[in-house]
Image (cartoon, helix red, strand yellow):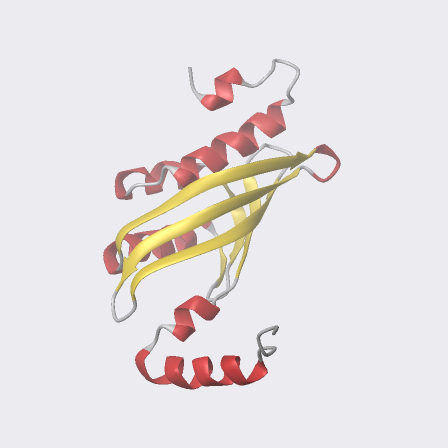
Length: 157
């Protein structure tokens, strides 16, 4: 029995669809990208700190690129909160991957997904701090780390 099947029968169909999408995204592999895209609405809007895309083909290209450019990318789904009135869910997750130039990258973030009336994902908006990416870059990272130290409060004594 999957986690989705274990949810109470009182859970609405839309919530089950949102949870199924979240679990599919968390278990994403290169051979499952096409399936994930079948869960997206034709006019899906996907946004993260680096991308602002429309349509399943654009999301598919982004995900395929992620698998090609990073080593062992993966999402751990930490929490799903469903809001029936807005037909949306908030997902809390942790992403980890081996990234060229940077090395190991771990980022915790959240996503707001909204379902359309057919139960497909019409909006997937990611919210996460991109500073860990920039701070690890060779040239700009040292400058940003220096600025960060100057802006930080002095240690309590």
